[in-house]
Length: 190
Ligand SMILES: [Zn+2]
Image (cartoon, rainbow, N blue to C red; front, top):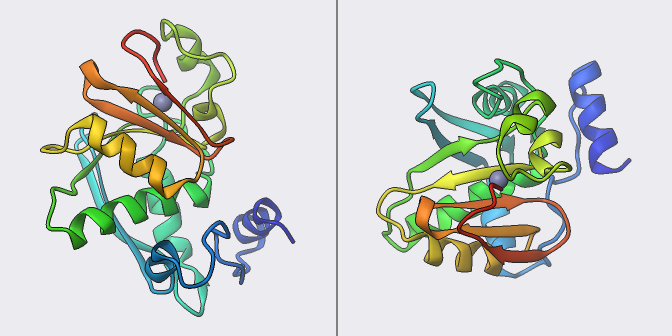
């Protein structure tokens, strides 16, 4: 069963998937260390003034359905009030970023500026990619107060999961779970 099938099973039948969401990290590397424990994530959504601190994955048990769904809700399209499954690997990316920053005593308040985006919403955004990963619940635009976007993008690239876009002048980075790639832009919306 692959990740998506597992997720479908999870959401459809309430079954617990046993595979870790993220399989990129080899045993023994620094990311794996973070993944071998309960995965708590603390997210803020400035647009809707929401904030959650949830566990979405219980080490040795699997999905914490309540926590996972709370994260999906927070990362919904707030403007169009529509929710979508969020790729668990995206949550793992945010989780690793947050706990890495925390471990080094750095600011780690993750603000989600954009998560899932409806096609209608995406079409209205000037410069947004037509096939944006936001449409599949596989991308997030992230701002962390007190952290330079350039530093964050380097960190996200180091995690090595998917796409990383740097939007220096707008103060955020885009992370997604597509192919590994990186870009920098002052105009295009992620
Ligand atoms: Zn984006």
